[in-house]
Length: 361
Image (cartoon, rainbow, N blue to C red; front, side, top):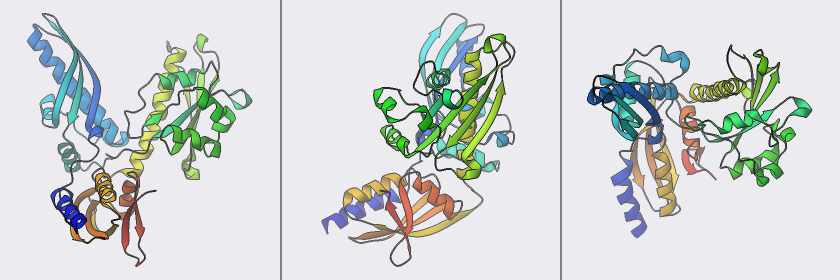
């Protein structure tokens, strides 16, 4: 009886109005501004306006498919201010006419979602599971993963791989990693030898990206062929191949960084295509939630709070063994199930065939 009262109290006070999910997705870090004007105050005003516009563009690029960005009209800095919850300033430096700083913006999730929905632009605002990225350099029996030199791995290690919706984890290359897998193993992302390596970094998916160099970068006429494969992907989506030509006055390092950015964008675009919320479609679903103990229920609630497809949760009934919830959600049931799975919740059928929501093992 005591557990039941505790459960009822927690449900009634917290589950009926879920907080915004995945707040970190709406945080944009490391916006660098540098403005010069007639005086310090004008320079700061110009810099902050520029920072707001930069941050908004980065956020939209994170949430919206590249092909859909053109559907959004340009915003003024004043319009962006209305979408920002708050912002912070670091490394601030000023002179009588110049202002430099590094800014962090926290956007208002509800305001951004409303802005995109009002313009009919679908978007994704749920993070995918972290993926272990294995950068292999060279072709066939000459390919290297842990060995030096591996400029492809160095390029990935020097970039921010967590800014997109799919966090990409580049392994350290320490003795434990080296003993786990070889470059030959890495060329097959479904190789079972890679799973312990992925688990070491908290990832469930493996992405192998292989860069093959042709030509002489010092002479300016090189090209990179990039072959990227994902574990568990459908055959038609499993492998992507692209070739990048070295631009005039582009160093080999710049070519590698451009290639890494291109691959990262493609991985995130694929995730956005599969997880965009269909706001023109809404539904409701009654689900049973088995309650083994208070701790398990709190964990279900915590994970539900992070599911952006779920707009509202209503308690229907509660007893000592289970709860019934009404989930109001965007999109279809398949999207709901996918969004729940990304937060380690499984939508299954109970013994009576009714939908059941359980913690993923």
